[in-house]
Length: 167
Image (cartoon, rainbow, N blue to C red; front, side, top):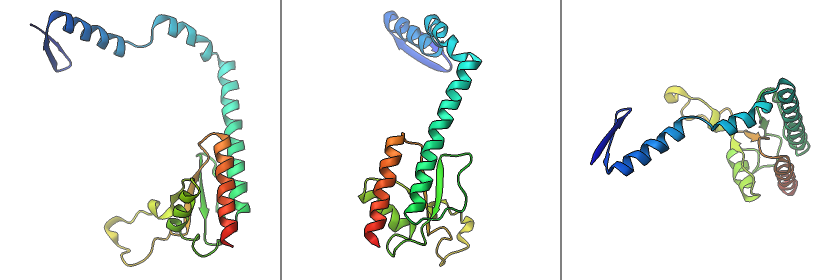
């Protein structure tokens, strides 16, 4: 039996096992291989980085517009459009009874296979000082335009249909 010691870990076993573990550890924490590093160099070219950044920005702007416009058409109010995140915070109060509460809307959205987050999940209430009073965000929900464009489009369509059926 041979022992290997590295970063406060001790491994006891046959020499061949110790050598294999040592070799794999070196591979895992040693960074990318030289061919991989060389292949990545063109990706660091400033012109390439600017093009990729612009393409990503355009994709997220389209998805944001799809979600924001779709939620508004469905009857939700946005206090502010997102400027630095891929989340939309929407006021549900103008919707039909049964959808204007964030938890109710969350359940209805799940039935349509769409996920949102009820606004009350974001209501910080340290010390439970507002006990007995409902959350000030109970009529809000948070939506994401992080998924791919087709999913955002389909999700908004499903939500709009659900809201329309409730009218």
